[in-house]
Length: 547
Ligand code: SF4
Ligand code: SF4
Image (cartoon, rainbow, N blue to C red; front, side, top):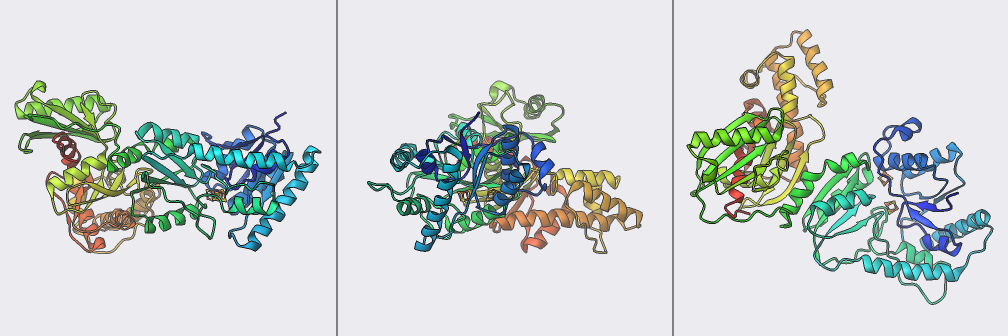
C-alpha cells in the first residue's frame, strides 16, 4: 500500500504532512496520451489537467492534495472524487492575497487539513517535526539556488522532462522557478506557529501568477528567461503577456501539453534561444584564410545550398527537392552547388548546415538554427530589414533583428500546416493548379471571398464548396492568400514586428500573399530574388564569424 501523499503545487503545506509523519511526493506527469483522462473529462481541459488525471488513474494514486488554483483544478478534484477511488483527496482553498485576513483564511484551511489528517492517520500533529521540515526545506531550496550564469524557467508546471530537455540543449544550468519548481518559504521562527506558517507559505519566494501580490527576488545571474505555458491555459497565456510587457531581458515563450512529444517539438526554439543569448551548444568557429564556404539549408520540402567566396559573394546556389532523406538531399544539393561553381569538396573551408535536418546532415562542420541563419541571411540581402517573415513548407516564423542582423526575438508556428506553404500547396492541388499559376491568377481577383477556416482540412472543404458554387478561381485564391496573410500578420503583431519587412522562404514567391501581407502590415514587404536561399546564405555567413 502506497502511503505517499502526492501534490502538485508549490503552495502545498508539505510541512503539515511531515508533522503527521506522512511521506509526500510531487507529481510530475508526462503521459504519452490522454486515453483515461479523455474518457472522463471534456477535451478542452488544459494539458496539465489531463496529464494529471491520466497519471493519477494509470498509477492508481489514492492520496492527493490539490489547490483550488483555477477551474481546471476544481474540475480535476470533481472528476477524481466522482471516480470514488481516492482514500484521501483534499482541495486546499488558497487565498490570492497576503493580507492579514488572507493569512487567517489559510490558517483555518490548514487546521481543516490537520483534522482530516488526524482522521486518516489516527496520529496527532507533531509541531516539532513540522518545524524541522520547514527549516530543512529552506536549506534545500538555498542549495538549489544557482548563482552562476543560468537560464530561468518560469511559468506553468514545468516538470522534470521539460527541464532536462532544456538542460541537454542549453550549455547553461537551468533554474526551475515554474509553479512546480523551487519552493522556498519565509524563514521559520523558533517555535511552531500556525499563523507564522500560513504567512510563510503564502509569502514564499517568487509568487506564482495566481497571486495578486508580487514577491520576486532579483536574479542578477540569469542571462535569459524561458516562460512555459500550457495548451488551453488562459491564465498562463495572460501571465506571459504581462511578463513580456515588463521584462527587458531576453524572454522565450514555449507551450506544451505535458506530453514528451510536445517537449520534443521545442528543440529548434530552445536552440535558437541559446544562440540568441550567446550560449548556443554548437558555437561556430570563425574560419581563417577563407577561400570558399558552403551553407546548406535542409528544409522539409527543399534543400538549398550556396557557396560564398572570401568576399561573401555568392558563387553558386541550388534549390533541390529534399526527397526521401535530409542527409542524401543535402549531399546532392552540395554536390550540385560545387559542380555549378567548378569547385571540389576540398576547396571548401567549411560547410555550415541549418534547417530541420541540420543535425542529421553528416557533411557539416557546424550547424545553427533557421532562426539565426535567416536573421543573418536577411541582413545580408537587405540591411535595413528589422523583421524577417519566413514562410516555409511546414512552418512559419517571424524574427525581429537588430541593425547587425542579430536576433532580438522570434515566434514560430510549427504545430500545424495552417498559414504555411503546405496549406497553399494543398489548396493548389484542390484547384488543380501549379503554385506559379496560383500566384499569377491570385492577382486577378475581382470579388472578395472569405475563407474562414485556417485548418487545412476545413479550408479544403470550403474551397470545394466555392468551386461547386462556380466562384471564380482567382477570387478563391485571393481568399486563401488573405487568410495566410492574416495569420502571418497576427504573428508579426504578436512579436511587435516593425518595418522594414523582408520575406523569405518558398511562399515569398506567391505575389498575392506578399501583396495581402503588405496591405495588412501597412508597409511594403520586400522580397529579394534570393528569398529562398536566405537560410543557406545565413549559415555560410556564420563561418565568417558573423554573429
Ligand atoms: S499557479 Fe500557483 S496556485 Fe496554481 S498550481 Fe501553480 S503555484 Fe500553485
Ligand atoms: S495549466 Fe492553467 S488551467 Fe491548467 S491547472 Fe494550471 S493554471 Fe489551471
